[in-house]
Length: 121
Length: 107
Image 1: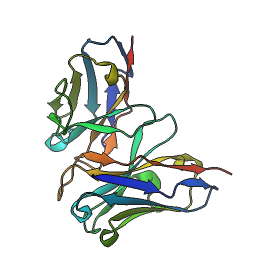
Image 2: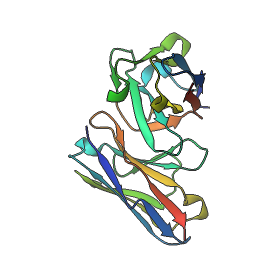
Image 3: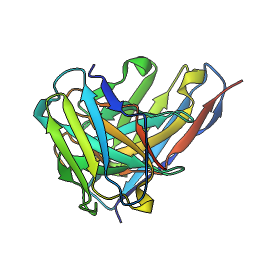
C-alpha cells in the first residue's frame, strides 16, 4: 500500500523547535518530489515547502523562510521538516505529501493523516 | 506569487443538483498546472483533478475540471451525499498556492 505517515508533532513554546518526520512506504521514495502542507485550525491549506527527488532543490513559502528546513533521507525513505523559532501562527496540522508522478513536478496525490503542531506558552 | 480566488465561498445545494465551483488566478497558470482537492471534516484532502481536467485515479466521472489561463471550473454533475465537503483549487506551475476553499453544503 502506498502511504506516508507523519510523526513528531506536539506542544512547543514560542521560540522553540520541533522536527517533523514522514515515513514513506509502498513506492520508490527517491523518485518523487515531496512536500509539507499545513492547515491551521478551521482554516484553509497552505503549502509550506517542497524538495526534489535528490534533495538538490528546496523551496519554501515566504512566511517560513529562514526558520524551517526541509530535507530527506532516501536511504530511509523519510522526509523531515526542521522548524525553529516557532510562532503561534505556525500552529497547524502538518501533512506530508507526495506528488502524483515520479520525476516531475505535479499535483499532490498521496497525503498522510497529518501531525498537529501547537505553539503556545 | 499567484493568488487563487475561489467563488462562491459557500454553495448550498440539494443531492442530485449540479455544482459549479470557480477558481480565478491573479496571473496565468502555466501549462494548466491546476488541481482540485476535496476535504471532509477530520480528513486529509483528496486529489480530484490535475492538469486542469484530468481525473485522478478512482475519482468518479461526475467530477470534471475545465479552464485555462486564469479561469478554471470544477463541476460536479449530480451531487451525491458524500460530495458535501470543502473544495480547494491549487496551482503548481509557479511555486504552489491554494485557493481559500469553497464549502458545498446541503440545502
